[in-house]
Image 1 (cartoon, rainbow, N blue to C red):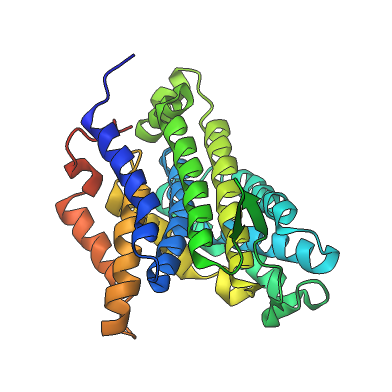
Image 2: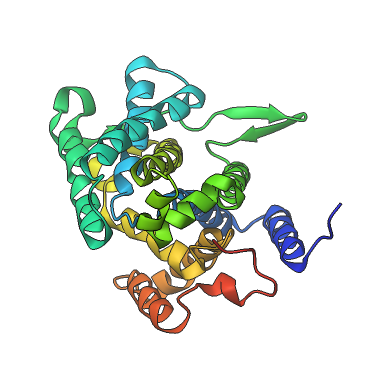
Amino acid sequence: MGKINSSQLAAAAGVLLLAVWPLIFRNQVQFHQVLGMTCLYAILALAWNIYALSGAISLGHTAFFGLGAYASALLNHHYHWSPLCTMPLGALAAVVFAVFWSLGFRRLRGVYLGLASLAAVEIPKTIVDNWDQLTYGSMGIVGLDRLPTLTIGGVEMDFGLNVTAQYYLLLGIMLLALLLHWKCIRSRWGWTLRVIRENETAAAALGIDSNRERAKALMLSSYLAGIAGALYAHIMGLVEPALVFNLHLSVLPLVFSIFGGSTMVFGPVLGALILYPLEQLFLMPLFPMGHSALYGLVIILTIFFFPKGIAAWLPAPPKSV
């Protein structure tokens, strides 16, 4: 059995802290709610980063988030299925869109791919906004079933209305997404994505089909983003085009990943855990109209002063790819 290094100890301490702090600060409902949404956006950041491992920069992951939200909402609203069924099924709508994305953008690289991905958000948004008979258009869908109440170990957990229980659910899903992210980075496939990112010509010489491997990364990434969107829809109890297909949701995972360290295992989560609570709990009360400027400032500072992200400052950081 190998030795436990300092980065593993730091990760274990971080998970323990995230697990126990709500038990200490029981009455801080706002904190529970903000940290729960932090976990949700961390899932989206991890999803974004899996695709970015191949060297592709997406500005359109809100399309997958929104499709997952709407597909789950429609199944719940029209067929009255439980969110436990609609969320994993609804996320498949994001994967279908990712297939068309891969086919349509397979020749694009760099800034051209980024701009095309941003423009692609308008396709599902426009369809949803104008298909009144199915989606109710810009009015959206309200009255969605909240997340269910489950009994775990004799303890009743109301994930729909109890924000503390909801936090623990989102934390658990985030940790599962983090484990998947870790597997992607450390696996042989992760090294394949690294080769593609660094030099596609060299990858082709090694017999690697860059388009196929990048498409596989996008399928996985889109499904996770769709799950995040479906969770969001049932947490809020409503969905509308402007809420789930917006530029802000495309920027968040990019900022979290770059700030935390897009080549580090824990980078996207670390970025989300620092920036989102900072914005919501401190900057929003002080600057209600300009708090989102934080993300632009963070990108500029990260590019100039710590391009590898803050995870690179940690002692014995996780191995980068």
